[in-house]
Image 1 (cartoon, rainbow, N blue to C red):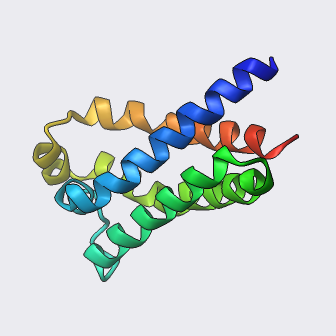
Image 2 (tube, rainbow, N blue to C red):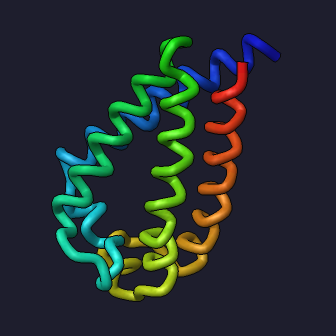
Length: 123
């Protein structure tokens, strides 16, 4: 089980870091799912990108893994409204070329990622 946990730590670290970098390479993707009631869309895209990069890197190191995991849990909760917005917005779905059903299928993964981050926070 320890080997499996180590593997998932590296996979998640790479995944969060990669997606964080994508916030800067292709911010339009993330702008399309920003809820209309929020302001400073581009700034929030960049801020969440920085957070994903930092917390993703923190997962790698034993000394920072717990803080990185907790940071990811908070981040995943904070960005969940964007996933809900994607489900509710036909325009966002068309801009990202996804169906409503695909958007809905995405939602539970946020919970799975939160559980994995919680697992990674434990010794």
